[in-house]
Length: 193
Image (cartoon, rainbow, N blue to C red; front, side, top):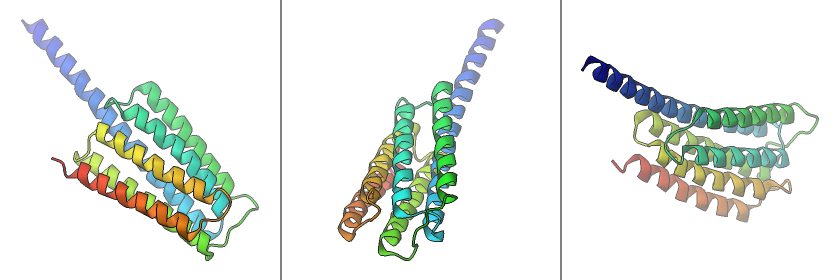
């Protein structure tokens, strides 16, 4: 009888710890997205990054977000998936540093840079809302996976828009419409009970 109780307690503890690790891993990954996006925005604002460089970094962020989507799809993040995500995030971090410290500069006051800055700031806000939802329990890991998929679509749009070194007003209008839809999805996931 005691052995069954001990075994059941051990299994329940392992399941709880595994779930807690998955929640912590998901939250940490989204927080890392927030940090990376903030660094890109800061680079644009300071002129350390030009629009084309920010676009390249957004393309890398898209890949990370897609992989986060795959990892969270089943509601958990395995140790192997976490290792892969951490390696990808470390690469993006190094690339942000390198791009910010190379000889290329941007004009933070140009219309194109201003548009990219606004779009990246919106990414920061959306990622923070997802992170808050995960921390509060309003958003499950599976819901976060769907939201990260939406974030990946938006960052991919930003990457395409700035790939030529210029983000036009029409391009930004399409990006903002997509970001509005994503904002509504985040709201619905956080408030669906």
